[in-house]
Length: 320
Image 1 (spheres, one colour):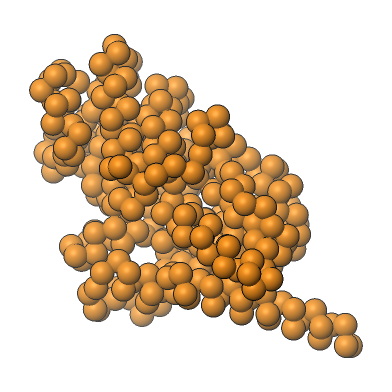
Image 2: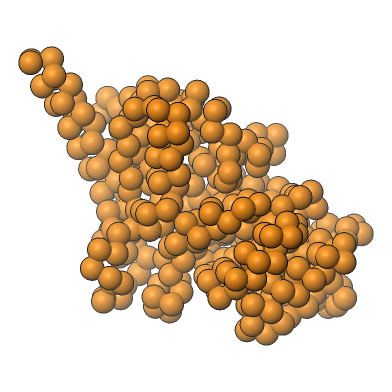
């Protein structure tokens, strides 16, 4: 298997081959699956070079002409360098372009801090009319391509190169609902997205052996059905896990949801904190995940200590 991004691009190629009116605009970022596409459908592929502002502007112009457009590039540049165009053209005019990036989080650490994509949810979540999709398997990658024919708003699709395989059937995915409960549990709710899901499901089996029955939620699309999610989680404690800066990520979004509804769930957010600035040491993705307490072992330690502290507080209240 080649991952969710390739499932997405392969489906786009298939849709075009079947006559769908889709155009890929690239910022000089290719993929092997697109080699044949460029040869077979030269009028459906346009490279604007390493010029992300132009990428979005051209994509919006094509959308204004009635085309369905995929603006494709390497994270974080189609967002970071073209935020003005995304806000003032695609969002204000509500143009249904699909901004598709690969390499979220610490996806390409060998290229340094310029290629970290750790703040994109914070930036896009506050833009009106914008939907954010983080595929967590190949089925979702494929359906995100189908959604490119249907969306009525700008869509930002963020692919992680480590996402592969299948977690879902096609009927289980609803981008408007935005989340799925992958595992039921009563002791704690773990909310995440993207590449973490498979490891969290695996860890949940280990936690159950230690008496912790965890609900696992995949928050794969924003905005989501907040009423439905609140109904699922009830008053359980919550841990959010994301390869994203803590401020403005899905943990912050969950806190806003709970606050708006006057819910009192205890929440622990796991994510990246640049308290002392960008890291001054380089390493692999695994190095950074361990550094920021996002490895399997550190996540498990956090879950256990979080529940232990809550139990201690309950016992303390009982004693008094």
